[in-house]
Image 1: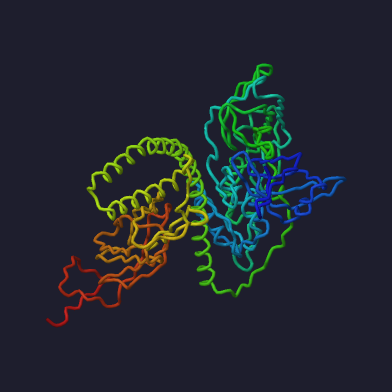
Image 2: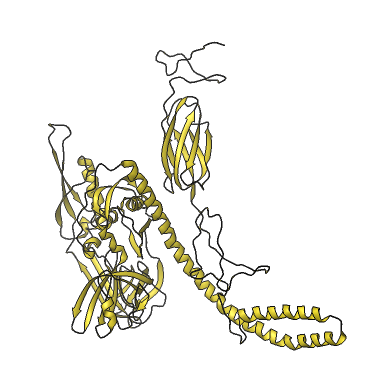
Length: 601
C-alpha cells in the first residue's frame, strides 16, 4: 500500500506502481493515480509518502508530477536523496575509516537535518573538500566517500549505512518454471579499460619554481585476459599526488576501486510468486536455469517491487555504474561560506551535529530492535487470550462453590453482617478487576493501564527517573498497583586507551580525563612509564590534562571511539622544577639536558 505520510491516508486507487532500487544508485517510487479520485489534488511536489517495500515501510517524497488524460503520473525519491538540498562546509580527514569520514560528513552539513550515518568499513582513505553539495561529497564520483571507501549503501528512512556487505548468504533458489519466468543476461566491453595513461601537473614550490608534469602508464592485472588492449587517458587532479611514485600508486588504486578492467555483467530475472526464503537487497542467492546451463550464486544489486500488491516483481544481479548523484538529479549551487567565521564556533557546531548523528543512528537501530520486541509481544498476547478464556472458565466453575460457602456462613451465624459485607466488597472488587482485564464474555482487553500514545520510549543515559502515567481515571490513593515494563539495554561503548608520552628521559606524570558529558566518570591515572594503558574509557569527548613535577601542563581535546585507542603527548620541560625529596640517576655531560642546583639544605 501507498500512504500520504501526513495523516496516514491510504491511496487505494494507485496503480502501475513500482519501487526500483539499484545498488548505490536509484531508489525511486513511481505510480499512477486517477483524477476521478479527489485525493489526486493532495499529490503535489514535496509531498511525503510512505510505501510498503521489500524491507518493510519506506519513506519517499514527490519530486515530479505529470498530468495526463484521466490520471497523474507520480515520481518520488527515497528521502536520503534530500541530501541534494544540503551544503557541506568542509571535510579534512587523513587516512581515516568509513565511520570517521561519515561522522565528519554529519558534522559538516551546514543546516540542522534529520540524517544519520554509520559505516563498518575499516579501509582508510583521505578526503579534503570545501563548500560542496552533500550528495556529491557522498556519492558523485571516484573522489567521493562512496568512490573511495566503497561498500553497499543501505538506506532506511533518513538512516544511511555504508557497509562492507549489506546483505547475507541467503538460501533462496530462483529456478526456471518454479519462481523465475523471464531471464536477461548481458555482458559488455563497452566501458572496459585495461591500460591507462595517468597524467598530472604538480605546481612548483616557491615563487619561481616551475610546474612539473608527470605521466605514467599502468596496465591492469587482467590485461592478458582479453585478446584486445583497451586504452584510455585519465587526467589526475588529486592533491595527494605529488610525484611519480604517488601517481603510480594512484593508478593501481584506480583499477582496484573502479573495476574498469572487468566486463559489465548484468543479469535480471522476473519473479513469479514468492521465493522459498525471504530476500533482501544485497543478499547472495542461487539462480538455476537449465536451458542456459546457468547455476550460480549472485548478489542482488537491483529489484523491482509493487507496494500495492506487496509483491517482488524482478531481481537484478550485476553492475550499475551510473552515479547516484547524477541519477537523482537536482541542481544545487555551491554556497560560499564566510571565511571570517569563528573556528571555535565551527568546531562546537560540528561536535553537536556528530553527537546528534550518533543519536539518530542509535534510534534507527533501536527501531529495528523495537519491532522484534513488538512481534514477540503479539505472540504473548495470543497466548494471553487463550489463558484469559481458561481463567474465565475456572471462575465460572468456582462461583457455585463460593455461593454455597456464603450461605453456610450465613446459616451458622459465624460472622457478623458487617464482616460479611466487607468480604462481599472485596470479592466484588476482585470480580470487577478480572472482568475489566478479561471481559465478562471471555474477551481479553489490553492496554487499560498504559499511558496515552506510544509506550515505546528511549531512555537516555543518565536519566534520573521515568514518569508513569495512567490511561483511565488515574491512580487511586490507598490502593496497590503493579507496574510492569520491559526494556532492551544497549551498552554504552568503551575501550582501553594507551597514553604515550614522547619525552626521554621520562620522570613520571599524571593524566586527567574530564568528560564533556558530566554523566560520564572522570578518569585519573598516574603514569610511571612512557607508555601505559588507561582502562575502560567510555566513548565521547574529553578534555585531557597531563601534568608532572618536571613538565609544563599539557591540555588538549580528545574524542574516544572504537578507532581511537592511542593518545600521544609531547610535553615540554619546566624552566625550573622542584626535585626536593626525589631521586634521579644521571651523569655529567658537556651539553646537559638538566642543570641541578643543590641550593641550601
